Image (cartoon, rainbow, N blue to C red; front, side, top):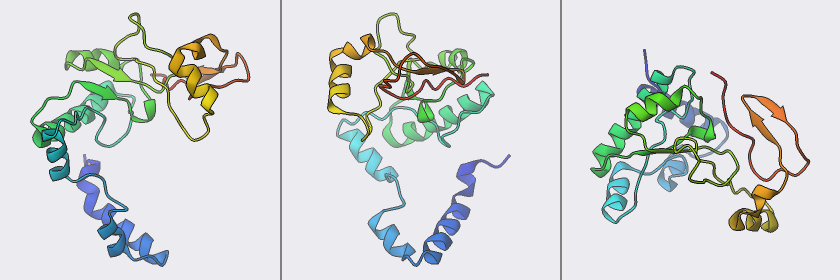
Length: 183
């Protein structure tokens, strides 16, 4: 099976063709780093300066098979270990999406915490692999942000989605919809 990281040269070629057809200078975009992420040497340097890099996934997907998801997380761990010399143990689910079947395999491989995009406050009763968080976007008003900072948002009505079923409780929405994917 071909992995997405094996397709990087092809993706670079597609990006070059698209930018050129759009009348843009592909090489200028590369020089300005418009189409790039951090380079490995930059990651290493920031790690030496105390920045703590933790887990995501390598290809930013949430497949139904927990073992396939775990392989992607472990690939990300291997790459981060190679660049930083540390072994990350905390995960941020891609786009906040997760499946209940992921939890046992993540625990088995020493993942100690994982954040979702489910709105809410983490408490001592929260499952460490299903930590909620506030997703701040440009559409969030100052009062809503302040409500989250103070903990008052938990007292306000909101809409949530569990496993794809929308359960409306009010017209006020204070964060993203829940990101549970049914297994």
